[in-house]
Length: 490
Image (cartoon, rainbow, N blue to C red):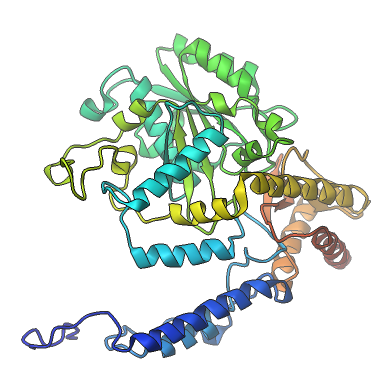
């Protein structure tokens, strides 16, 4: 198939529209539809399956020739927009996914229109990202020597932070010579997110050298077991490198004892990396800040801003205590990237010297606009509101004999299950797995599921600024209704 067209044509083409006014009218309609979608989201199901005819329509042949943008938008309205993940809905509490905001959506439109690569250039987008990261350095209590970088999310933030840890604590030039024959060991609780293991693998440190340390009854790392593991590795000739602490574990929201871990790392000469994917945001609330006390002592900190900071996907952040160690892990010289005395590439501090990407989009604009519109104080109040909602949900669960809470609620995650009159573990697991499926398919609510101490549980991770207390009563009532129906057939 020839899809190139006529290479000898004298007509020069562009992707700009022929009728700018028509695009302006369509753009206004898109914004109107967006506002309507978000303002009425509560009236729709949380999630609904994509119907088979729509699935078939979205598997169309290669579009060799174009069609009017108006037609493409109509297809979006009928085939794509009605079937989202559901995380913009007030009763979505699954997988620690944020809710997004209207301002963030509009900011992404503006950023795409500018189409800036925030990397090496002396321009306003670079200054905006610099400002946003400095705000978070201050908000998290990091020193002025710290650096910050916006990334795609917590997984990339963990990778960047641990790459800096590897290079800074290896004892030799890893970038020049590789890891070599040294066996480096890293330590994290058994509740740590799988992105940490991925990072360890990608950095060539070996998954088997990531020690999964036992947790206590509140799912926090056992510091005694950690100290024992470090001592054993040293005695065996291995080189302990870093401790990865959790500020909000993915399963239960547990926060490791950060001050104790910082003290241990200082004594042992280890790097302290904190995975604060969502829990770090508790630092923005004066009421909740004590729960993550010690987070400011980390050598590196990873957190997501599209989770508990409510920004649209995707944007995360990594902070590194010493900016020179951060840049030493990634800075790379090239003639085409060299700074000049003036002009577009006069910028000395390059974002490409602090992470993996050279091409980077203008993801800081949505944060800059949202934070200037609402302020950090309101963001902290919303985080505290979600924690209060988690306590409310826990109380609703505890008040129902047919339901059972299976973990403490230190922050915003509530794990529970329908128990009814059942006692056999396999039957309980099967019932609760089906309960989560039916919640989704009914469109009532969308929690996720997980394993807590080996048993299946319904998991509500509350990072939703649209949720109201009544929504949690709806969830509990639905769990009771569905659970009773399932129990009759068990």
